[in-house]
Image (cartoon, rainbow, N blue to C red; front, side, top):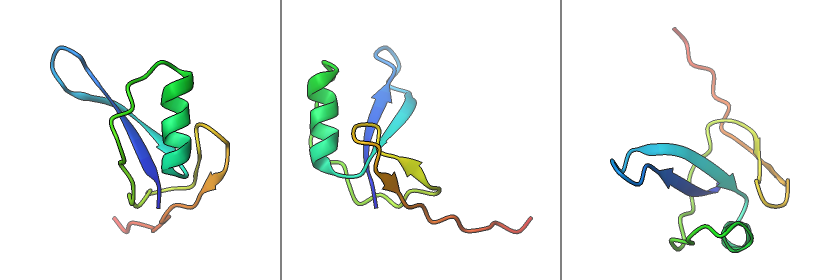
Length: 69
């Protein structure tokens, strides 16, 4: 499970990027250190693939399910 910071276009509101975190703690501190508005808890997301927490570098285990075509 992971937490997300969603980056949206200020004019259209379109989703531009999703930054993953291993915890709400890392989410909060990343926002604080980078002058980004912390929009509150945004967790319990199933991450589709392994990734690193943008704040502390901890591995976020993804689902890594193979999709048959």
